[in-house]
Structure formats: C-alpha cells, structure tokens
Image 1 (cartoon, one colour):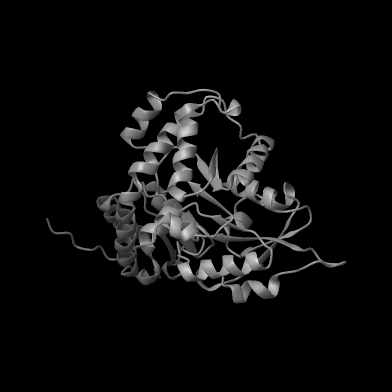
Image 2 (image 1 turned 180 degrees about the vertical axis):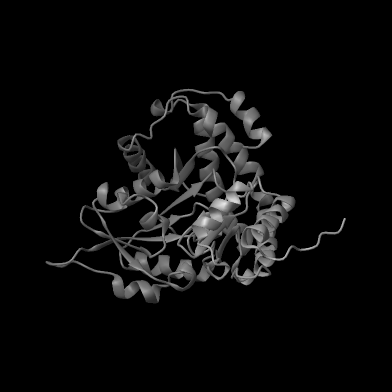
Length: 338
C-alpha cells in the first residue's frame, strides 16, 4: 500500500459491516457503484470470492459456465464453481485468450434430457494467463448482446479492468456497461493491501451479499481495509500507464537476451510471459535463481515464466531484473554508461 493508503487505514472510521454499519465500507461501495455507473456494489475479501459469488447467483445447480481455457475462474480458483456452485466449466481455447461469439455460440446448450444446460458466460479482461491481453470493446459488447438475446447472463472477471481501461483508452463504464455483473480487484494494479468489489444491480448485490456470508466473507470492522481501497480507486488508476511502459521496457530488454523468447508487441498492459527453454534452464530453476538476486517471477510451465510490473517496480527495478536475468542465463553483460 502507498503512504496515503496507510494513513487512511490508521485513521479509518469503522463499524460493523455485517450489519451494514461500517461507514468506510459503505463509502467504498457507493463510490465503486458511482464509478461503474451501477446500482450497487459489494466489498469482498478477494477476487476469487467475488467471482464465485457471481457464479452462484447467476446459475442453478448442474449448469455449465462457458469461459476461456486460461480463465482465472477455471484455473486458479480451486474448482470452486463445481465444489460450491455445483456448475461444470465448459472451456474454449481462443487466440490471446479473447473469446468471440462465433466461438461461444456452438458451445451453448439449451434444455435437454441428457446434457447440462448453459447457465453463464464469463469473460476476463485483461486476461492474466494470456499475457494481459485486452478485449476489443466491440467484441465484448457483441458477446454480451448475443448472450443476453439467448437468455444468458454474462459475468466479467475485471480484476485488472483499470489496466484494460488505460491501455484501450475506454473508460471502465464503456468496457463494462453491458455485463450483468463485474468483479474488480483493489489489490493488484491499484495497490491496496486487500479486497475486491462486485458491482451490478441492487437485486444481484443483495443475493451476492448472502453468498459472501456463506463463504465466510462477512467482516466486522472492515473499514480499515475499505479506507485503503477508497484511496486506491481515486489515486492509482492515473499512474497505471507507468506500469505498462515499464512492462514494455522489460519485454524489449528480455527479447535481447540469448535463449529468451518474448514478443514485446504482445505486451500491452503489465503482464509478460517469456519462454526460457532456449537458455537450457527450466522456468522454475530460472525463477529460483532470480529470487536469489531479489527478482520475483513465476514459473508457469517448465518453459514459460510470468513477470508483472506494478506500483513497487520502477524503471530502475526493471533494469536490475534485466541484469539479473543476464547473469542467471549466462548471457553477455550489457554495458552501462554513467
């Protein structure tokens, strides 16, 4: 969290949010609803809880949820759509993680005596495991229009929707207005210590509040967290372009290192995926060695690594990461002139 967030947390006015009496939480929810031009919003401890609450509200037991094969809701939420909502994921592989209605339509299932019926379409913008890729506005709008004509709700995992907004030049309202519900995260690019929000209709949010309670997400004096979230909403979006610029700088530097494969043109927000198989090291060993030099990166597969730029990573940090990668893979060192 930023110094301003820490001060806000220390001075936060609090109450009991389970009884809807925490003024800081209430202000955060009202502000989120205002920013997204929605009827209501709900503060939740995590994006996973927010996504799963949305699945539970939108679907019935035994239905299918259509999502892209690399979706967070499918890969990184512990099978909760099946374990909790009783739904089955139907995944579709799409170029750069970007679904289209032409890909979705053949997978939509209606009433049948033998097959699970489609209950929800879920999109992710930006797409984490597809390298921070963006949905073109006309593509997501078309999906929402066609899905809703088919009687299907559409939920957006917008954990990084503010990154999408900055990169695309569209407001978060433009990017999300056609979705039935949206989850966005305060603790990724926006830099708050914890928390996400669901936005939607009053009816949807009232149902999601009940599901939040089922999942143990009702919190008492949560204003200390909400106060940081309010600061993040007001202050952080305007600096996200710096993270994107640093990510492109990092990608261009990595592309020059022998054995490392990355296409800088694909780096459009703050997430980088790079192939280190040409170095003779696995991504996991590369990650371990980088950590020894103070650089944190994830091994995704044995060949692919993931790096992310954010508030705590400046240009000098990117330069140190490049130097560490050269040392780890044994590449010639790039001269640095004062």
